[in-house]
Image (cartoon, rainbow, N blue to C red; front, side, top):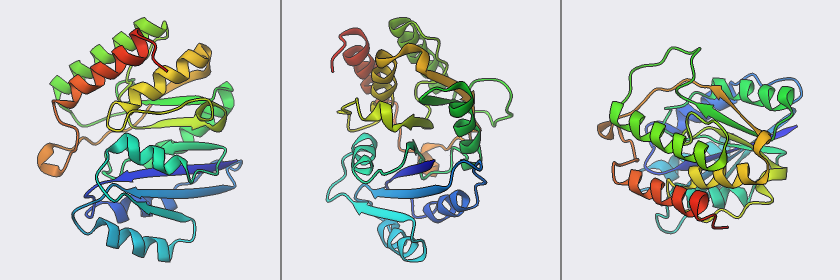
Length: 237
């Protein structure tokens, strides 16, 4: 199996090297015999792109691309998919909120349960985590409940950045959302293809604040709700 790791990055000069080092140190299951790392710089205004080019020179398994203008996380992932050659892909945020150490468990769950979509959950029990924003927790639980009701599949964390997706699924999906709403779009469209083709597993979570550089703003909650209505309730393609 070959895994492709897509890293959308915007102004992450302080963490992009750390995330690459962590990914290079991950102990993947024995059946994962190849990996590629695809870094999409979303027109960063700091030194991220310079660092990314240095990382590329030092790591032959890294592919890099830079947007000419800032387009959003969803657009960065979609750009990453143009370079994707693996059997599966996972989106790895560059901000270190999610730990690459959880990726092997997600891959093992995909194989053991014979599903093609593994969703990470920051709320399932079994892992100790630092406390995070209660308001964002409530918003995410509401969105997860809404998606669960619309699709009739119980989900606990639709907004989690960790989504491991098989090529069989993504080849049938046309992602259109350019910003944070793409996570809801992706899982809604995947579940509409096949309801029993997804599982959730608990993942670690180290939340950042806006002062630490977190990109998600409160206004983005309304955009996510709009996405759920568009692809969940109205069933847009």
